[in-house]
Structure formats: structure tokens, C-alpha cells
Length: 304
Image (cartoon, rainbow, N blue to C red; front, side):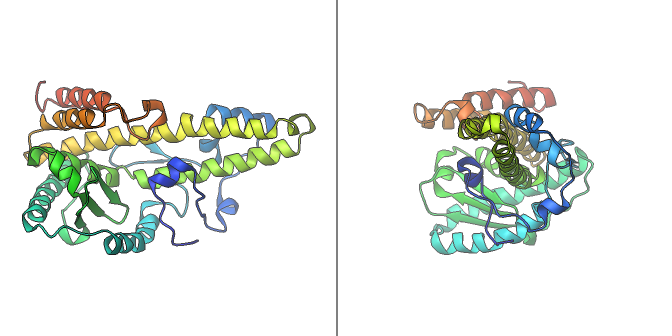
């Protein structure tokens, strides 16, 4: 397998994902007829038929994670990409900004460990050396986390936030992606989707009745996977990371009511410049804000 890092952008654009050579040999076999393959592909049910699912110990969610694409494997792949990122993107020379991000991260990460232990029954101890935080000096209004527990924060997102509570919302969200094993699941779904499309193409090629419609059927199947499986999963991951991040920042003593405010700011900033929600990897900011309010109220963290 190559050392190529699997990124969310690959999932969005359909870029090819390299798999272990023996992946198909090890995968659980489920004989399927040509009609079953085609109907399953359109319905978005082929992916879970290829291999079994695992249960996330933190969220309790059932997840598709393929051999070779688990978080530990992706963590090894992410090391080189993280090194390249740091060498190619300037990091801030503003010591006050870096100190702000690191201190907010440290407090949020300690809250994460408390939340994992107290709320999710997953004993956890915060070990600072297991994480690496970089503050990149660009206007990008974003942050990201890699499977190897590297967190990148762009200056642009720090300038959008009005206080450290909102910054903790961002950082808690990124930590939530790690505990949700979202990179592993997204990569596995992308790989399984490609296998499903190949299987359907082979089935169509062997059918005299379907050959003449092959390209159209495969194209429809690809669209069904993209809009019916990959993008909805991505949006679910974002909301799941939001909820986990709220738990972490609450345990850290931050003001959780600032989380919906952050998404008000994001909504204002992106108004008129974002695609419809069903075409996006992220939920609509307004919907996201409401989901946060619902969760805060349900948890009793505050009443908004």
C-alpha cells in the first residue's frame, strides 16, 4: 500500500484510494446477483454488504472500517503528510497567538479526558506529547485534525472567533473527529464505494441487456453513492464531532453557549457562498447552530 494520505477532499472528489493488495481476498464474501448489485448500489446498501461493521467505543455508533484503513493505519500514513504540510505552509510567528491556541487546546484536551472517563466510560489520561498542534499563518477560516493526532489551526479561524470559548468549540470539535474515528470510516466508505462501482461495472458488462445502458447506470450509481452515502455520512460526522466537542469544552469549564454563536458567525461569513446542504460535506451553519442548541438543552449544560 502506498503512503498516500487519505483526505476528506479525496472522498469529496472521488480521487482514487489505494488499498492493500490482499484487501479483496480478506473481505467477507457475500454472493450477489447482478440485479442485487444494481439495486443495492442505487439504494446505498452495497457498502455494508461487503464487510461487517464495528461499534465505536465512545459514540456507540456502528461503523464500517476496512482492514488497513483503521485509525492506527491512517495515523502512520498521516505522518509524512503532516511533515509536508508544516514545510509548505508558514506557521505563525505571533507568540501571543500561538500561546492562546496552545493554552486553549491544553484546557480543552484535559476536558476531553474527563468527558471520556465520566460520560463515555472510556478511561482516558491526557498526555500532551501524544498530540502536536500547529498554528498556520494563513487567512483560511478552518482547522483540521489528522489521524495521528496532529491538529492544524489556521490564523483565519482564530480571527473569526470572538473569545476562547469559541476557539475551544473548534478545538473540541477536532478532537471529536479522532474519538469518532471519522477519518477511518470516511476512507473505508470511499474504498468500499469504489469496489461497489467496479463490481457493478463488471456485472453490467456481462449482461447483454444492460451493456447498452452501462455508462448511464454506473453514472447514476456513482451519484447515488456520493449523495446518498458519502456526503450524508460526512455531515453526520460533523454533527457527531460537534456534540463530542461540546462535552469536552463543558468538562473543561468553557461556556458552551458560545458554540451556537460561533456558527452564527460562520453563517454570516459564508452566506451566499455555499452549496445546498445535500451537496456539501458539512451541514448548513444555521442547522448546525440549532443542533448545538438542542444538544446543550438536552444535556442540561445551559438553557438557550
